[in-house]
Image 1: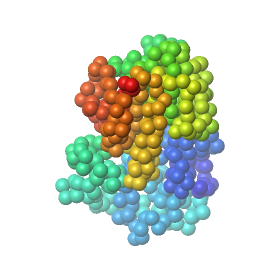
Image 2: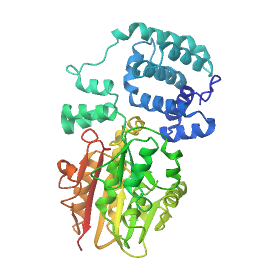
Image 3: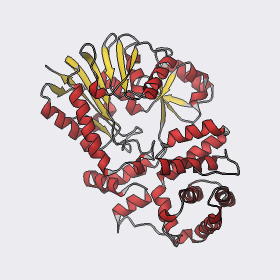
Image 4: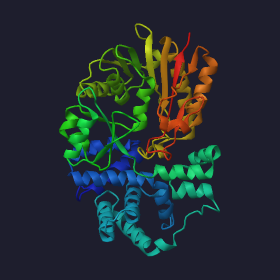
Length: 450
């Protein structure tokens, strides 16, 4: 972690510390930012700046590195992580923000001088001033001549992922997909209808100057049209809403739990889908919420407490070894996955994931699915979902499950989410993030027929 001696809690300084932690320690962007905010107590404006810069740099990293490499006489990877971070932050700001040029360059030099690589401050200054002189002459791979290279560099995605998507969907769809992944994710909240109606919450938010509108396809969803720190509002503390993407909300509706049922959520943290299930059950019945890490089951319990939900029983265990005391009416398996459907929301995933991860996660998903098959009573419902758009984790996984478990069949209600009609296949629903204002998601419902 770099030590910055000037404006340690400025947005740029915090962003640099976060980027170093992400690259050197494998930290998750949202978690390291929250940790730094708690430590350094910056002003809200600086928090917003740090968040914008970190997520922006992560989204555009390939593009930024391609530009920087043309300005350096040595390989970019040979520079210290802190200096790479300063350069990426600065080139991002000069390309994608209205920040004054002189302020960007001066702050970059100041950040470098404030760390242990102060001797490289002149290099940073020279690279940035060189960029300002030469930016009109820097090149990118042309789409016509090198479409894979163009999508990889200009839209900043790992080459292996671009190649997979082009092979599956072709250049045009992949182009739209990578463009969508570099746009801001929509912000939606789920009304806690156990405590307040959507109409009441909408009135409250609009009265506070928070512009929102109802989502027709989801009776409890509101889409926010203006950004604001929602978790500091009194209505968050009162449990009136939960921040959740609309695709994620659809999952609980697909399981369609009834009041009084016995339900389990096998990979439940942080509790968004679990608490939604409880809401649909009108807070009656029982829901087992599993995670193998105590701090994660605590997070589920904390969310349930804030939302005033009483029917969730948290269980800290490996879901592969857990059994309820009696067969379940319904079960949600929101499986661990590559997360390739949420790259615009979590841009660090694109650099964290490697091709080998896919094989490992598919094996884990298969093991979990095999175990869930033994936990349901006849007629019981299983919803399998991922925030991945990869065939092996979704349609391929369900095909394999059905081939090895003839006691199950896919059951997709004809009236479920009419807007997703075009995304329906024999195995389930696959949502691509460029096609609607939703995260990329796969979901299906299976019924145990004997």
